[in-house]
Amino acid sequence: MSNGQPLDSDGRSLLDALTSGALAVDGEGLIQYANPAFCELSGYAPSGLLQQKLADVLKLPPKTDCALCMSACDPMNPQWATFHGGFLRVENSSGAEELRVKIKHSPMQNHWTLCLVDPFSEDTTLTQAHSDFVSTVSHEFRTPLTSIKGFADTLLSYGAQLPDEEKRRFINIIKDQADRLIRLVENLLTASKLGASRVEMSYRPIPLQRLLDKVAHSIQAKIQAKTGVARNLEVQVRPADLEVWADADRLEQILINLVDNAVKYSPASSTVHVLGEFAPNDDSQIRISVKDEGGGIPEDLLPKIFTKFYRVESPLKQEVEGTGLGLYITKSLTTAMGGQIFAESTPGQGSTFSVILPAATPEKQAAHRRKLYATEEGE
Image 1 (cartoon, rainbow, N blue to C red):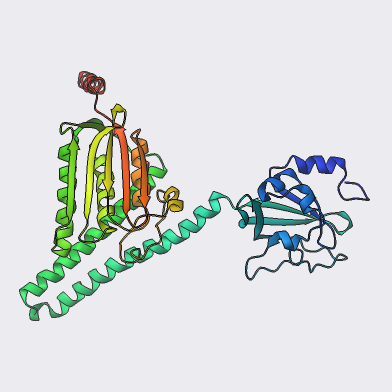
Image 2 (image 1 turned 90 degrees about the horizontal axis):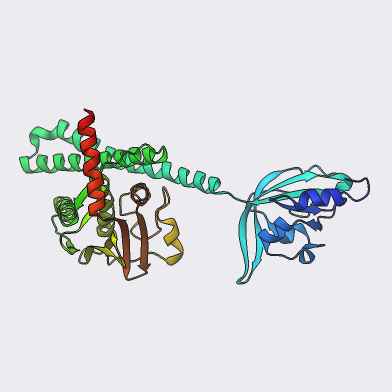
């Protein structure tokens, strides 16, 4: 940097090479320089930024005080070196929008200021998601524990006075809430193992019709025990002798998550359709689809639904138990088994979740038998 202009050719070259957006702002809060990274981030041409007030480009969030960003700084007292969040006004083909950014100010010579601007990273989003997760899990633990303690206390205090039918009802509630806690803990442990890549798989051919019938029966039994009402579950496999190559326990976990989710987010009178078939144009892969008749998911939210801790905002959200881990676990297990999962949805017409996994081809089964034989020989 020279003693005249704070930015000489070497300084500009250095800032031009940065991957962070950089702005040089004079003592009056006017932009005198913008590097290529900032222009790319904001959608502005360099000529469109020069001599603009920084306050017109960067907007402060509520309760954030920054003299430079508010064009209220004293050019003779450049003591505004700060780090804070803000919103960048972004120009694109669809008009102007605001992007959440991190802003760092550093004083330069002659009362100029260097502003480094970066979009908030996925780490920040994950931190917020983790905070939401802790809040959700706290609620999910507190609700069943409160029920268990309340009904247990009632039985201890007044059990001798209660009719047998009422006591059985209380015990069933305690059991249901204990099962809910177990499912929550199992999901948390699975998510932890997936994050540490400690999930072990044991592959074998799995008759799909038998597995889907088992999953449907399990879901029906759970719903009927809880509500006394059976739900419409239509299970179909074509051809009927399809076999999928997967870990049986993990695939069952995937399917229970998907079918249970479809039932929970669908009206009581609707039908959940479960279909197993060869993937289109590829008989080495099997596609298992779970289609509901619920409210659907907006298109812009579909990429987020498999994210850890994420739950789609909907009128049913407060009524449905969950921590936002089910679909994350489902996708992680599917990917770990070499498969794919995706969702399609039309708001108001329901959603379809599809899992694609390898078929149990003769080659895979022969390799599996050789492996078992080698293991037995080694023993």
